[in-house]
Each structure stands twice: as structure tokens, then as C-alpha cells.
Length: 213
Length: 213
DNA sequence: AAGATAATAAAACGAACGTTCAATTAATTC
DNA sequence: GAATTAATTGAACGTTCGTTTTATTATCTT
Image (cartoon, rainbow over all chains, first blue to last red):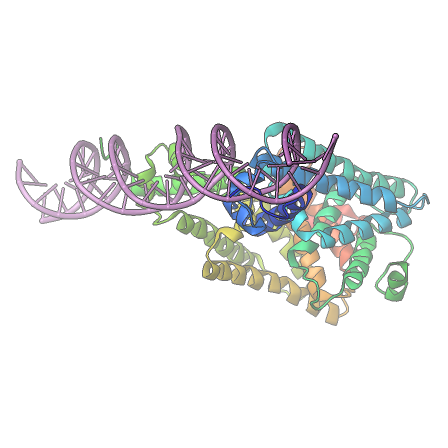
């Protein structure tokens, strides 16, 4: 047999991407075989090579598009206001929403970096660093303006990102907490962590937080 | 050839463990081959099977001992005082010190869980949950006593652990910050995050933090 | 309807994998 | 110093891996 009735390149490629994200997230990149991926898509392994020249190309494509998606999401949502508190809140909201929505893709992008070739690793890390720099700038400007009280901007940025991204480790949709509830709590924790002067986001007035979502 | 002069089972096993932690941390469990590990130790692959019946047994042993070490470290350092702030500070100090000291082992224990068989995965997760529960209890009792101001104990515990463990991702010994400096800043961030009433650990008086290390 | 192109199957490639087995030598015991 | 035990080698096993090649069929173009 060869070409099957109803086969469509675009649909197959999309199915490959989706199956790959799920399989890599569950079993890991090295542990997922091309045959396993092909079976999940309902195709022979050789067919995958029409869309991705190598297994690593597939991984890199998934990661690059995930990082580009993160940047685009932030650029669309980033507030025009220069208020540091508002900017930080937007960053936190976007980060958490994006990562919860794409838990598996985030897992892949964070855990499989070591399977990339050196120059591709550099490319992905550059995108990640650029995204993290946005947070550092917000923190720095907020601290300079007296809106935040921060000891070490770089360290605080890393701590915040680790804290927020960590959501994907334990969060499961439909369990005890909803996404807005989690986001509200994380916003509140973030604002206290950076010593935000105003208490709009403090635990004392959670209703205000809810409203800003 | 067969047994080599000066060969010693205990020394070989220790060398295997150390090499395995480093190789798995760098390349991942699936990507590390038994031959590669053997070469690093300076031995043939077959020799490894004298010490670990399977590759997965090796991984499980490394993880179990890492988790046991974490628990033992905490039990030794845990303060007798019932003061929530002091207990939380001790927990943070121990967690950061332990994870920075054993960066590679932590990487392995956190990233390679999916390579364990179901019942071994359960064993490791149980140990991890027990350790995390200690933090939840501290937070809960502190909140009940009015020492902390916390919205959601479980969520705050997860956020703190993700934040602290995240240190191993970016921290490199001998760079900009020393371990005590990092620890002090994380202590300060932690105390603000949980809304600790007293400001012993606030950014305003960093000297107090240093002293308590 | 014919020709071109897109999408796949089927089979095969060499390489590498985890693991086993038998043989061999070093160290220890008696 | 002989017997035993500990530690390791070297070769081999069957399996699976990522990938390539070739053939075949469906769909699109004209």
C-alpha cells in the first residue's frame, strides 16, 4: 500500500506535532521512538520524515514555536501603562495563563533542552533569556520608581519565574482550584514578594485581585 | 584479562554512583548508555551489573538515597523551638543548602521520575510528599498562630518549594553571588511571601539575616 | 483522461542498546 | 600453597533505534 484515501499533509503534520508534544511530555524525548509517535498518529514511521527531516528537528520546531508563542502572547497583552505594578501583574497573569494552557509544551521546552545540538540550544536559550529580561526590566524600573522593594533584581526575577512556571508541576485542571483562583493567589504572592507598596493585591483584599483578572 | 590489580568493589560502586549522577544530570537517564557510564568509571559495561542488577535499579537507588538524605538533613537541623518563623527559616536554609550542594542529584531526582516503574515512582513521590508536608505544617501552624498571613497553605507551600528548588537551575558556585548571599535573599523573599509579621528577615535589615545563617 | 505531484507503505540498513555468560585473574582464606 | 572468593573482561545475544530507499497509490492539474 502507499498513499491512503483521505490523507492530507497539513492534517498529518498537525497530528504529528500534537502527538509529539504529548508523548515527549509523558515519556521524554529520548524515550519516545519515532515508531511510537507514528503509531499514535496512525501512520508508518517513514511518513514522519516527510514533515521533519530528523527527530531533533521535530523537537526543535516544537520548542521554537512554543517560545515564539510565549513572546507573542506577552507582546499582545503587555500594558501601555508605565505603572510597574500593572506591568508586573500583566506579566504574571500572562505567564501563568500561557503555561497552564500549554502544560505539555512547557514541559518539553523546559526538560528536553539537553537533547538539542549546541547551536539550537543557544537559540532557544536566547529566546528564553529575552523573555526573562522583560521581567527584570519591570522589576528594576519598579524598584527605581520606589514601587517595589527588591534586594536583588536578577535573583528575584529568577525566583518569580521558577515559582510561576512551577504551577505546571502540580496544577491539574478541574481539581480543587480554578485557574483564576490560582492566578489571583500567585499575583498576591508576587506582589508581596517584590514588596509592592500598594496593597491592591494583598491577601487582605482578594476581591480586588479577582476583579483585575 | 579479568580482575584488575587494585580493584575494589566498594570503590568501584562509589565511582559508578558518582559518574552516574553526573552523566544522567548532563545527558539524561535515557540518553546515558551503560557503556558510556562504564567508560567514565574506567571499566567494562558488564562490570556494572555486579553492583546494580538493571539500569533502572541504578536510577532508583540514586533517587531513593537522595530523598533519604534530604529527610535526614532536615531531621538533624529542624529546630526544637515551636516558633513558626524560626522553623520556616530553618526549612528554607536546609532546603537551599542541600539542593545547592547536590545540584546534580537533585536534577536527577526531579527530572527522571518518568523513567521509574509505577511502584518505584510511587515510593519516591511518597518520600517527596512527606518532605513537602513538613513545610505545609509549618505554614499552617504559623498561619493559625497569626505569625503568617497566607491565603492558601498548600499552594503557598508548592510555590515556595518551586522557588527554592529553582536555585539549582541558575546558580553556579563561584559566580556573582555566594551561597550565604543567595540564602539570605531567599529567606527574605520567603518571609515576605508568607507575610511574616516580624521584619527580622525583611530587606530593611539584611544584617539580621546574615547573622542567622 | 493523462500526466504530474503529494502522501504514504513496506522493507531494509547499520548502529547502538541493555543485558547475559563464560572465562580469567587478583585477592583472600585456611 | 592450595582452595576459595571477589572483581572484571571480552564476546555475544536479541532487540530496538533513527533513518533511507523504493515502490505504490491517491489526489490534483490541465
